[in-house]
Image (tube, rainbow, N blue to C red; front, side, top):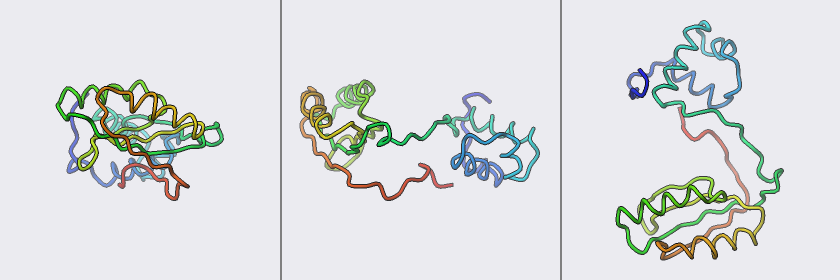
Length: 160
């Protein structure tokens, strides 16, 4: 089973309930989860393990409050590369791994090649990153930034 892909069609109503519950609260015990989804604990644990092994559940994380940690600025950067060759796309994607300020990155279609979600201590630190790192990257042609004002919605990444 390890590494085997589970198709959406193979997920039954109980699997979907498990995913919904864990996405809302990944810290609950297996007993609590089994009660919430209406099955006993052993088969619930087997189902969770199957979902983990299939890669549907990628991991469990604590959601941190960035402003309380002194990280008050959230911004998005739209990056256009000079050339969209496979090697340049891969090189830029790999570079994002080394940038702690970049919390999530997507390769996108349209006017830009990448969309970066950045979290910084303040505007000065973010500006330094844009100027000294992003615009200095050999593959980057354009950088357009958007500073956020306030987050108005925060839910799990996948609707189940």
